[in-house]
Length: 206
Image (cartoon, rainbow, N blue to C red):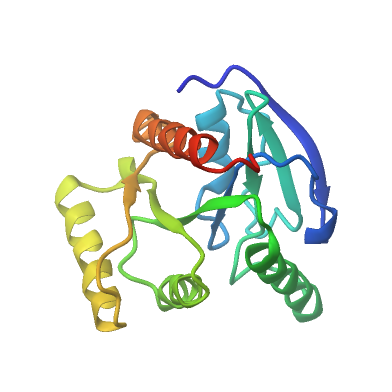
């Protein structure tokens, strides 16, 4: 898939006010400072589409971008470690939950994980919530250009081990990416394209 158009549509903090268009949605979420905005900009060939910042927790709203006029890329706030007040954090954690549990247009979420670090409990816990809530998701490992192939493989193996220990039957589909070197871009966009084709073919509502 080639992205020809990527248009910002709306930001809000209420899942019920998200766009009414019945188009498939792909939500991107991860721990603060995981490189989410950089990945979105890399995928869309637009370095200014999503706001990047050295300060964790920059995204604090549900951001909808319409891609090629036939699907939405949804940029969600990061979980954990954002330098915002506890009250603010509890509010946006709630609307993230509302979005995941009530948004009918969501066909897949991408949980972003910094591949440089060994398995983090907060990521395992968030993926457990996704699994228990039966929300379809894939994993995107980011910043793959920062460490060796050997370390990448060992860190992914560590995640597999932890997930199996948490009663996962299998590791969710995953992608290894680098925003600076465009690693994983084709694979990720190809996956979205394949899912879109299945969605439009099998679901008359889309």
